[in-house]
Image 1 (tube, rainbow, N blue to C red):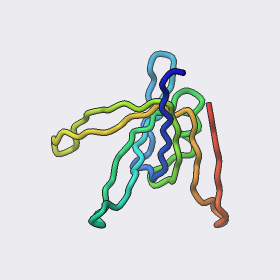
Image 2: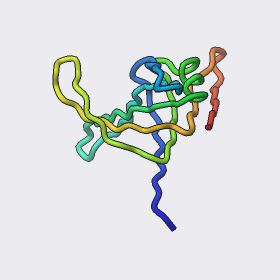
Image 3: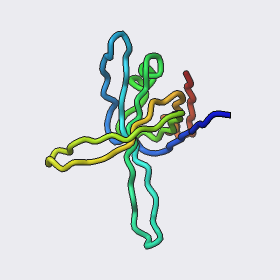
Image 4: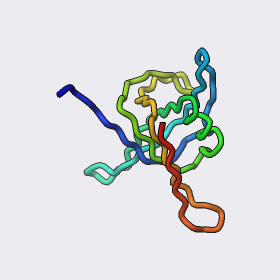
Length: 118
């Protein structure tokens, strides 16, 4: 049997998706904050950049907004480097989602959950 990895992140979206074309494919990208408390009780946050391609990109464009609670799954994760607004180098993790679950509450107060997989 070969090697494999399955990644699932659940967290809040940090900004509205950024949509771009890569050749003939559309990709919507957004960051998800995954937080926990360490042994000392201090909050730690890891930002994971989620890339949704093609039809999943269309779903992300329509339904994912800053502050949305989402769960994204992928079979691959890669490190990424970027520079923040103050010019400080930052590191993050990138994943190409093959499944996206929208966990936001719907307008009438009921809990809404919508799952999209490609």
